[in-house]
Length: 155
Image (cartoon, rainbow, N blue to C red; front, top):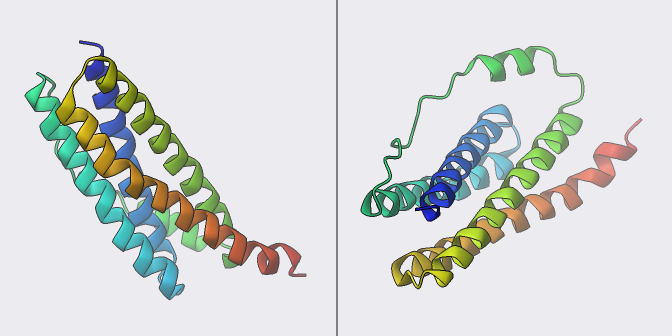
């Protein structure tokens, strides 16, 4: 079933988004709001990945369980080479926003496929989870708008 491909890809995307949010929180502990909100909205992606794993299993897919161990070395390397923490945070939020946009697109594709196949359970899953992904995007967008003027105009 080709819908399985969409479930697998969305599961992978949500898991990667959860990792990226965890890394953002870890790399920017001194930015209290970023740190705490990133950890809070990360939980949505963890939950989504687990729900997708269950949905995939019900449809014959075998998906790995969240969470995988995240290697902390890249964060240590990045911390050692930072020049301007505000620009690093801006770059991280920008990447995260693009990742969340990709996850949102994957939810749209899965919802369309589920509707075409009249898979009520999968349509319901999309309706429950996609709005949280949109909120993740709204948060990153808001943070980018808030932080970019000062970060980009600093001399």
